[in-house]
Every structure is written in C-alpha cells, then in structure tokens.
Length: 337
Image (cartoon, rainbow, N blue to C red; front, side, top):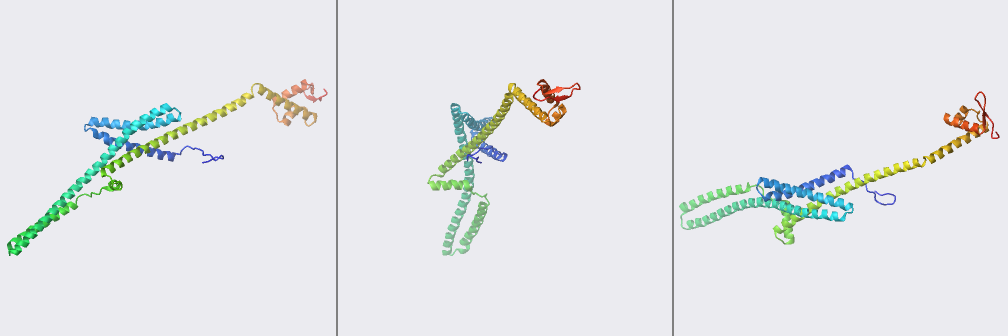
C-alpha cells in the first residue's frame, strides 16, 4: 500500500499469513530435528546413549534457531558486537545441524539403496539359475543328437527328453518365484541421482553426496528464513504498539497542556472576559429597552444562569447603571448615573 507521497506503508501481517509462516517454520524445524536424530541415534545402540544423543540433537537444533532469532533482535538494537556473538553460535550449531542432516539423509538413502540391492540380488540369483538350466538343456540337446546318430533313440534320447522336461518345469517355477518378488522400482530420487551423475560425468556416490548436502543446506536456510521472518514481524508489531502508545501519551500531554494553559491565571482571564462580555450584553439590551430591568428577563433573553445574572446586577448596581427600589425591583438609570 502507498500513501500520498508514493511511499510504501508497512502493515502487520494478518492471522492467515502468520498461521502459514508458523506452520512452515514448525515443519522445517521438525524436519531438521528428525534428520539430525537419524544420525545421532545411530551413534550407539545402548538405550540410554540413544536418549542422550537424541536430546543433544534436539538441543542443538532448537538452540541454533534461537541463536538466529537472537541475532536479529540484537542487530535491530544496533548492538553489533552482541550480534556477531549470536551469529557465531548460530554458525557453529548450523554446521553441526547440517552435518547431522547430511548424515541422516545419507543414512536413509543408503538404507533404501540396500533394500533395492537386496531385491536386485535375489532377482539376479533367479536369473542365474534360469540361465544355468538353459545351458543344461542345450547340452542335453547336443547329447540327444549324438544318440540319434548312434541309433539309440529309444534309450538315450527318451531319457534326455524326460530330463529336459523336468528342467523346464524347474525353470518355470524359478521364473514364477522371481516375478513374485516385490517391485524394485528405485523411485524418482534415485533416478535424479543417476541423472545428475550422468550429466556431470561423476560417480553415483558423489552425485548422491552432493544432492544430500544441497538439500541439508537448503532445509537449514529455509527454516532460518522463516524464523527471521517471525522475529521481524514480532519486532514490527511491538514497535507499532509502542508508537501508538507514545502517540496516545503525546495527545494526552497536549490536552493536559491546553488545560494547564487555562489555569490558574488564564482561566481567571477567561472567566473575566466572559463576565465582561455578559455585562456589556446586559447593558446593551437594557439601554435599548428590549427587556425590562429585571433579573428574570435578562436571564431569559441572554440565556444565562441565575448566578451570573445576580453578579451582573450587583455590578450594575455598584456602577450606578441601575437602582434598587424599596420593593427590591431594579430600575434602569442609564450610563449618566
């Protein structure tokens, strides 16, 4: 949004935007913790050591993101030395976290590779047996041709045919077992690793390591970005609330100043001016004969209070503008009195 001077006006993010930000931040932090746990939990098989290393991984991950948040807080306060110390701690913890993520992702990838390799090994074993049976059948066929040349069809050839029939049944059974194995599809990740290896003309292991490092660093940067975004938003809303409070205080002080300006001397001057104005107005209406010379008539004409009318007539009487009869009624005497 822009104001009249064509400058952008910063507004606080709404509930929906902040819900999305907190969701992404929580998901990124949780993923980073899980990948670090995959590495730290594999360091020892003892249950208590697993608990210890797992707690250490969680502490490192949460401490890392808090150090990044604290870096933004200190930088906003222009505390450069403290900002560098927070950045140093974040860098150390981030290096440990990225190493843990690399180890965790790599471990998960290697486990998947091992599963695929086991399946491929089983398939290769069945293929070797089927190939061996094919070779045996081929050798039996060669022997059968020799028996045919020797006119021993009834004995040798019949026996070889029976043996080949058994071998073919065995071959079919092996093929069925091979085809019944679970699908060994390596998935898109392994396909991506293979494509990277072919494109860069490097080993598959090197391509896998490069991809794992890239994903680990990207995950850490993604989480750090949203943690920094939350910190910036909290600082903005805090400063906005402080600005509103300051503005409200200034307005109250200004109002108090204006009220103070009317007291005590200014208020007295203001009261004198008002009384003088009513006094002159009373003289004017009485001089013109617009109203009769009585308190009630003057009060009704000028719309003033009874106390003010009493004070006005006291002043009129003191200055000789009016006189008071024995019945306490007033008579206009005029300015010559």
